Length: 422
Image 1 (cartoon, rainbow, N blue to C red):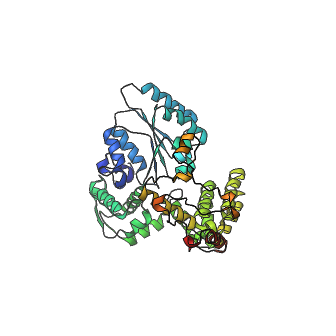
Image 2 (cartoon, helix red, strand yellow):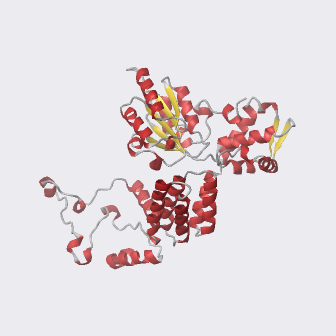
């Protein structure tokens, strides 16, 4: 018999739970699917939020050849064979065949390169699914040819709706009298993962001999303690542990950071995954308080790539302790977020004429570059002039947090710009 999660897999968008920002009425993916015109895209999100299901719904809906590859088991040869099949199945009047690649982040660079030409020429329409940040895992030329859609962990209301659907519509659970008295433990252990939630429900139900089953938090906790791996196969605590790891570094606790890193290592985590998180933490949480942190994190990443396990654990531990014990600042992180928000609010403001290049005589005549002051021509390599667009010329985006290192940078800005930085 199929697992409960597979029996309840949605077949249409109307059955699909969650991700309303993508598949709700009028949302981008729903419009694309209902129109029958699919462009290449990548779905990025944690496990159990509906990436594979969306691909299968598209396969059911569209009348075009649909090929599936798993990056875990497929090589370059398999990719080329599918592309050749797609060429042969394509007719002038039909849409491109669709190629769905699950866990596309596991494809090597050469495997992704073998896809690039087919996607570029429209031989296939690519749908990729990944739990990892595509900007790290997908080659830039391929990523630039795909839209990126981010799927979110399911919210409590989504999970509760899924539970009700399970006990009222599943052919096996309908035979039982299941009462959802408490759901807090189910929500906590599932962590926004629909598949995990249904696996837990199935485990609890199958462990009971009575036809009447009252689901309580105590019952769920008891059953999971008896068989913890029934819902947590090959490190389902992945996202909880990486969260604890990053927060321990941010909170300047090297002991906790080392502990959570050891948990990841013992759980078989990819060392590159750990190294990437260290690089992110160095930028986001240490930042300008200690710019050397980013250099050390990158060096640890390089070391992992060069020597691998088990020795790479030493470089990772060195970076981990260094980051955890470093002073912290997220002023650069806050600054770029503020700048992005400002750009969204103000749109494409014109570049002031004096900041524009003037490579032609016509541009010079209409004022391009006119009035620009070359800072190196002035004492201290600085002179006051406007660099922001006219509409936002007095806007402040970077705010120093006055760690010892950052205080020097702040004092330099104060000396150069005066009142603007007070």
